[in-house]
Length: 447
Image 1: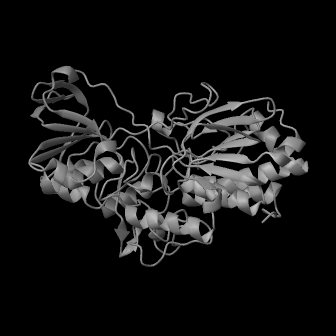
Image 2: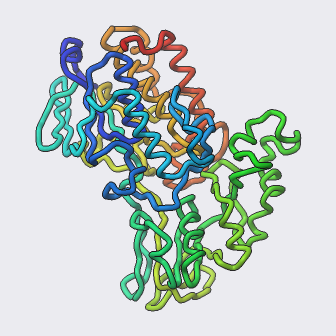
Image 3: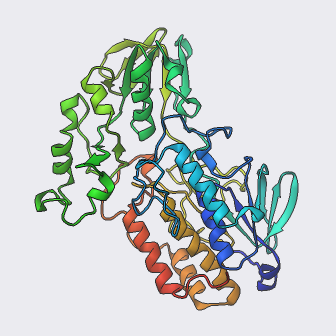
């Protein structure tokens, strides 16, 4: 347990690591609470991964939000996307939105750009954080350093003899890189299918390797974004409402197996939805060939698990990311079998009261609204602790016990590292809103 005294808390500021979406939401909440804080950002601007010019960003030219501009989870409270943004905002739209949010909330004075946090260690009642080579002391540490900076690169049997190129999708930027090549994309997330669709326009051939079947969700239904259409009470006939989402998707796009894709082994939205209206079109026109799992590489190509062999020039591994926090002491965050820290309500350390995580989420929508609510809960928790409010003790008891609401909406998730602690966006938002209303009904009152 942390032994920070109230006197020290009143003097020492709070440290926030990262000025991406989560860090900016956290900065606004701390400012509204009247708490002293500093944000450290390793890059020369705000926006995190959404600035493709930042080293290590996974953004590519064709990247867009998978949730629509006006969906509830797509924006911060009080800051809707401008109508000039695309219905599914491009990466440039999102970056501009984040920059404008930081400016509108006047967050720049508290953000130290081009200043990486190299080391953070707990002391006797404080955190010593070394950023830009300079150590400083803080009363609390909030890790908002992002989840898409550290690629997961699987070992492929026979890779040492493969004459072509193997790289992770974090290095991919534009379709022109693949012109005239025989390309294999490994993975079935939204980035994988986006890159496959890019390659379909320029590459000599494109294959998409998937270990299991997934549900494909159209971006528009009857001219309306799917995530808004599905929420309309009058949009769906009774037979197509949950739990019959599978029937709806089979009606709208057809069964995946009709396109040569494997049959999903899970219910719709029990995993990340593949929001892409192009990939099935390209598969149907022979521009993308569905493949199974890779068994091994050979000198000139790939052999799949079903024995099929194929010549390949380049392999792009769209195999995900692990949310590393290398500035923390080893073992401070428990990852279990997953790719993100295991935190109570995805925010609170199970035993320490002076370190938090924000944005370490895997969910089925955008996270902007979710990190906004999480930031308010963290700021309220810190504020209540300094005031000695009983709400703080109540929340601490829940965190230590590990008890809380069901964040899965009752769905059985896939047993993969990516889906450990997966949350349903609506269930998670409702849980956060409920905690704020129950424990901190007056909101943030320091601003």
